[in-house]
Image (cartoon, rainbow, N blue to C red; front, side, top):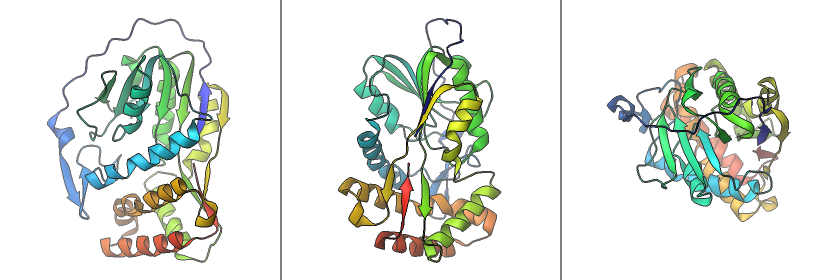
Length: 293
């Protein structure tokens, strides 16, 4: 996790008033590929499933982040809060519940958020790839950026906008996950190298979280701090919640791989599922390495 403060050079802005536009039918359309549901609009920017199974994996990740992040994360704030690439919106709703003095906006370019939300939480569907995405948001005290799928151009666009809409001394917080494998002869390492290649061909970097600190500094933020939380891949060294988190992450290998492996490596669905199963078996049995957040 990385977080930082804005430099405090912004002029005071007016009170934030936002009126949401109705979500167009084209954002609600989904298509079935590889037996999973994918977004039809902006599917190239979000090549991962958005079905019920994918949503069901999210709460465990939130629990683990909450347990670890209380040491570093912003847990109580007032004012306006942005949750960028909000996904299924769990962080935004959870933060709104715990901080009733805040107004939380979960923002994404893919529609997968629920209708029933806390009174102080709203979801907006905005094209975050546009340089002016931030213009309707002012006096933001906290910007939380979720996993970006290795998209460096999106990261730069979000940080540029966050710098402009943050209030003086506003905070930007980012989360990301990387897999560090020490055994380079097993199926897990081979699979992860192929996954890196597929992401690279899609102009993505699985190692993007390692650049968060430098990108924050490059975009004008100060007091940048990075924190690593490492989950051992050998179960005898991990807690019960860490084991649950690792299992949940491993259950999502197919979601990470199916679309990009097929598109860029020419793999069939059957080969991708087999390679995922072999990698997951090795990682379930335990190997030297860490899942790092």
